Length: 142
Image (tube, rainbow, N blue to C red):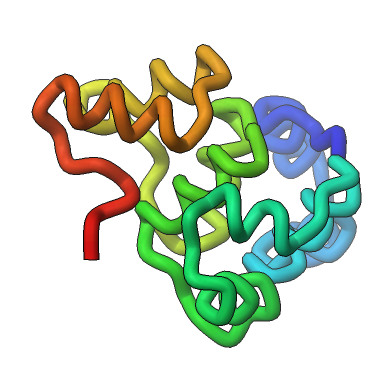
């Protein structure tokens, strides 16, 4: 799922005679979290159940997220991103589509997560790093 860079889109928008036409062409703000997750699954050849399990989500809750019946917390979105092995750009895009804030390197906990995403760490390894450094883990104990 190769998407144009934000800078390229900005240039095109500024050169466009009609912002509505630009928005339609690029489906700006039209893609739901469910649609985006489905596209990611397809483009990566992943099975939804495998991602849900690797993300450490309850299966029912996970399916509800993937079909658009539930809105996940920011941490649940990060769990899914790590389970799908998304890079930092893809992770931040997923967060934005879910209505959550991007990872922010001036936030200590976010900085640890950014480091882990960049290094390709699994969810488990990321949680171990968060715990080791005294931060709240993504998969909180019940």
